[in-house]
Length: 128
Image 1 (cartoon, helix red, strand yellow):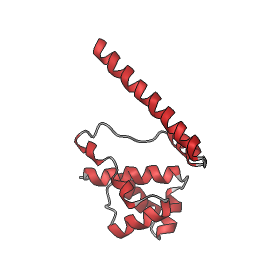
Image 2 (cartoon, one colour):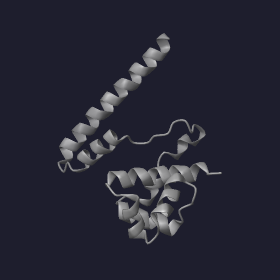
Image 3 (cartoon, rainbow, N blue to C red):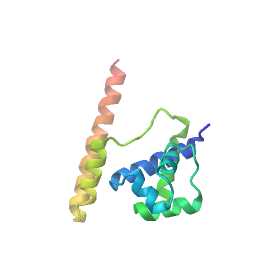
């Protein structure tokens, strides 16, 4: 049985790998393991050791804590926050923006739109 934390770490690994446009084979070669091992890490069937997690964080340019971000939602496994290919494409485009003011303005815009959609969803639910 896959532990929810292992599944979450695996999803975070997969998301970071996609954002960096790396294949499982790329990650495997960098770690010196098989791509099947990376598949097992991503599915949560094999646990990632602390040292391996650190290597992954360095390789993927994320802080080690990134793999545990969002764990408060473990009690609701239906809320799987996987990035769609479109989400990953937008994240890659945003990561290439170097002007801090522009990036900040885009973040505010996206947050506002997301908040608006959340408000609309709750309004629709309240009217049903």
